[in-house]
Length: 623
Ligand SMILES: Cc1ncc(COP(=O)(O)O)c(C=O)c1O
Image 1 (cartoon, rainbow, N blue to C red):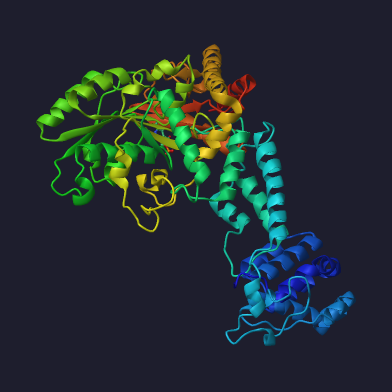
Image 2 (image 1 turned 60 degrees about the horizontal axis):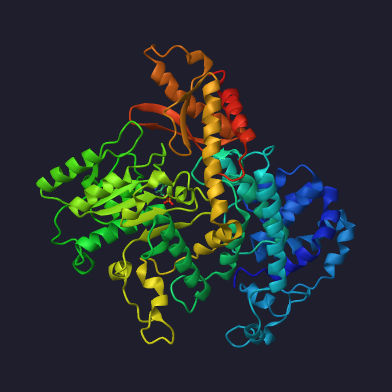
């Protein structure tokens, strides 16, 4: 309630345009008087003072006073009535006629007492003994027309600033600012009173302006990029409906929809039955798999905890995602018990080494319970050989999980799904449509072959207030007890709407096109001096060093690697400060910093690939 604007605030807002006209005749004069009465914070004073144009200075001053507190607004109105101000600005005469009643500290309550559209405050007679106005209970706290107008304006800004400018190659990918400068520009502090609409809309614009445009065709930084308009509409719709995917009664549409999307994804894996869940990201999907694998081997762990368990061991490759280690730490397995299996030169797990390490671990008294292999490793985009790994998992009776968070979308492509040959032999698959399919963050699934309701056995807590057993509909639809979360966002709609819009064939085309772009990019790199591939890409990750002219032919020099390691960070700093593009780099094993470009956005065209290479050359030619 304290956040409601006070009546003085309303008066200032109502007469703002008129006050700007009048006070702009001597903006500094009014600022000094306001400051001498401590109506501004010191930061606010500096901000107002920094405005050069008088009308902007007065606007900033009024906005600051309005948003600071009802007391500041009240003090400002009193100031305007003072003789010195009245003499300097004769047109301020009208202020004297404004009837202002001093507010109590809960000015917000008074304000709702008929003051929204008028200038005069109601009096305390309208209030009951608890100082709550009787009329207050009959009114909603939300003004729909005001709220919807704001929403419409916000959507306009989103379309113009994020979706039009944000995808225009002539515009910047990011508007780099140092953190201190950005914090100052954004004025992030939260205050006791609300702000006027125009100020808030300016804030919406600022958020858009200073945020990275991940939809921009020159954003190659991460494994999410671009925009899909159907998926985005789905995201807006699920946000507006704001429901919780735990019971059929609150999310009837989405319970059925989630089940259908999971079924369709399982079909791509090659399973005609099974289970699954949308999870908050691939890391969580991987952790779920780890927990389920342990539960299948040791169901008592749910009730008895880790007490009495043997040492457990997980097997994965050093190029797998770090969430495997995080999961081991989180679930009490321990990162020391994550056994790293050798990879070949392409970053793929070596099955013979897996077998040897499992045997060795067993001989040391530990219990191997999970192999977490990867389809599409984060840096190199490698696909572990699933069929051979499945043979080993079957032999040792170990749960086989595939982290296909990145590469899973190849399952849409007839041409490329061979990369995941053997996927149907896994026990679980994690897959992030928010990555290669541009479904929007977050959209991640865990798919399970299990038909024994393992998810529920492992995670249920049977809360009687939510999952009543005597409901009037099929309680199997209340899927909420399968997850470790209580509240769970609706992540299926964005994928479902996009899939409906373009069909499996449309999604297949996107996957195939990304591969074609990569092939083109690699061909062009080979035609230019200075681009050295780490290896031929297996997927849509292209890992390469840019060798600037000064280092070419100097491979034998002792400081070559040291100098090469500095190239990528320097180019990255330049590209970000100029805002022209975003691209990631990293070292890997004994290989010094190299770039990883991931090409997945459906907005990218061939000319963006050419531009990309030109830009790297431009940014690095003098190094
Ligand atoms: C192979 C792989 N697995 C898992 C993840 C984690 O996914 P999320 O960021 O959704 O937690 C990533 C993310 O980069 C990944 O590349």
